[in-house]
Amino acid sequence: MTIASDSQRKIDTYLRRLRQGLRGVREEDARDIVEELRSHIVEKAAAGGEVTTERLESVLTVLGSPEVLASQYVTDDLLAQAESSRAPWMILRGVFHWAMLSVSGCLVCLVCTVGYMLGGAFFLAALIKPFNPKVGLWKIGPDNYSLALGMTDFRPQGHELLGWLLIPIGLCVGGGTVLLTSYVALGSIRKFRQSRKLRLNPRS
Image (cartoon, rainbow, N blue to C red; front, side, top):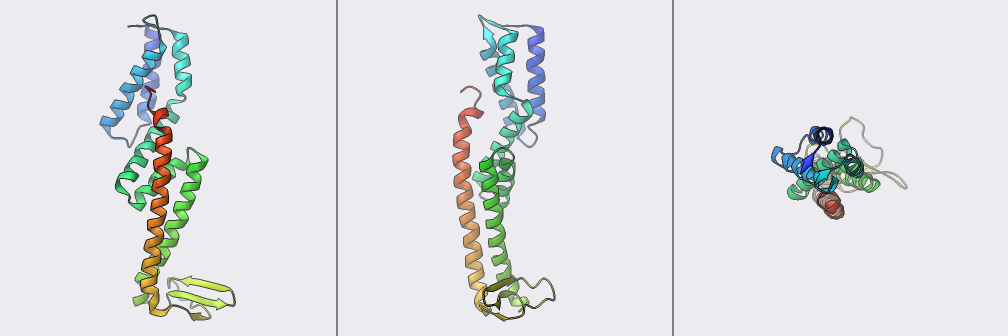
C-alpha cells in the first residue's frame, strides 16, 4: 500500500502525541494500542490502495485529539486495574480519572468519595475507641448528633450513645459501607467499560 510522505508524517505525528499521553500504561499495551491505531488509520484512509490526504484528515478528525484519546485509554486501563484489584484506593484512582471524562464519572466519583469517607470514619472510630473514651456517637441536642473521633481536646457537651458497642458497630457499619461502595463502584465501572469497549477498539 502506497503512503505519501506527507500523509506518513501526519500519521507518525498523531501517533507520537498519542504515545506521549499513554503514561502509566504498560509498555507492551501502549505499543499494541499505537500499532493497532496505525493499522486502523491506514486501512480507513486508503482508497484504491493509496492513502489520500482527504481520507486521512477525515479519519483523524473522527478519532479526535490524540491527547483526549490517550486519556480515554489511560482511564480504561486504570478502571481495568480497579476491577482486577477491587482495592478502594485503586477504585478511587480510576474513578477520579473517569470523572474527568463524563458526568457519570463525576457522580460515581462523588458516591465513592462520600461512601469511603463515611465508612472510614466509622471504622476509624472503632479502632480508636479503646485508646480514647471521647471517641463515640454523641447526642448534643434534641436532634443534634456528632461522631467524635477524639482528634482534639474538645469533648462534646451531651452523652455518648453507644459506649463500647461502638467498636463492633463501627467495624460492621464501616466495613459494610466500604464494601457496598466498592460494589456500586465496580458495577458502574463494568457497565462504563462495556459501553466504551467498541469505541476504544479502533477496528470497530
